[in-house]
Image (cartoon, rainbow, N blue to C red; front, side, top):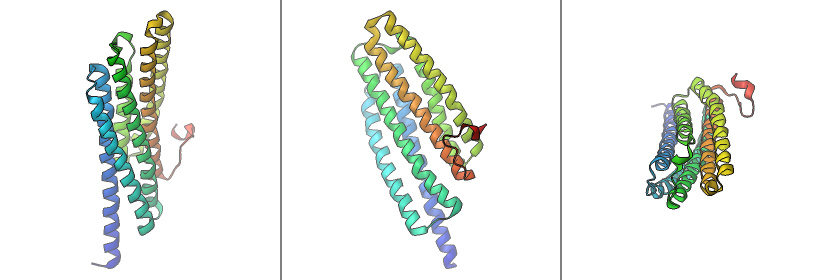
Length: 229
């Protein structure tokens, strides 16, 4: 085999392995978020330990992927689209790790609520719906990355506005609960913390999608709402 073709083939394998590891990390984060949502609904607080353990695996993958990115840049000196892919991945894994941290916060908040003998469902807020919307954003953002699909990435970014509106509605409901019955304050604050974590998961999915657009099109649309209209 021609030496340059051999080097090119090895480089493609490196990039392919890097993308696979990102999707593996994304799968773990999806699992964390889904388990945290289920715990909120069912009160199965035993799953909190598993979610925390999964977070360690996510953190380890983030470090490994960061090391691989640095190695590829130093050894392969990628140019143009390949360099954008590596740089995009280095930022995507940061958002995935932070989304995993938010899932851990949700799980710990759920444990506090149930251990205090309260039932969050009694508060009538749409946490489950908000969480499903944020989880869908994460799944679609990862799908957009896997397929390098800029169109899907744009739809995820647009979906973030709906999540923000729903989050604000939940906060208003909880403030009303606290004003009407001070006994609900402690649990309401925990639910506010949970809903904030969910809203931030949506933000991280949006950030991932912005990086997909950067990789695919070479456009940096962060902080530029006009870019996706």
